[in-house]
Image (cartoon, rainbow, N blue to C red; front, side, top):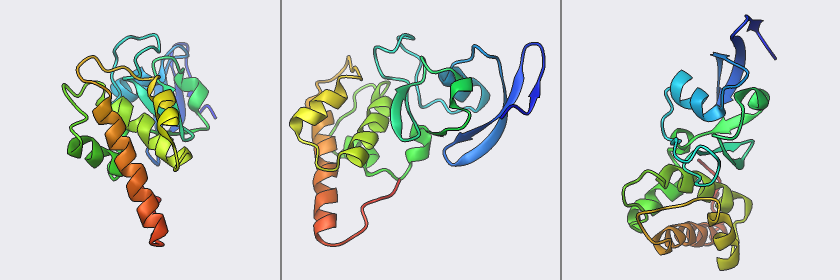
Length: 170
């Protein structure tokens, strides 16, 4: 739904991290630029600019997307979740506990992607984890710590499910 339109900019509603906001965009604005420049959400990083590295990963309707490739106008009726919206995701703590960070530049993208993985595949095996991690690159560390962080959350969720506790939550 377009609220207002000028020669260069369009005012549209955007649902980010559970909050609807009206923003001004150009038709060529990527979601990454809108999140960083219009909304001040800088967790998603500009890195490769062509969808190869995953540093800009966000969730669009719960699915991981490279926001450098997604036009903002394409996400108008979607729910967008950034790393800032995953404050309470157990994966954030698991990354710290498992030393799954080095410089931290790629970390938000890995956490967002990993959050989608554990949500969509709560019984993911090593092969599924490997498959999902292929969409993100890290140049500073090995991937073992990242895999360990994801596995620790999957194991904790299974334990909580076994004990009859609610494992959903962000």
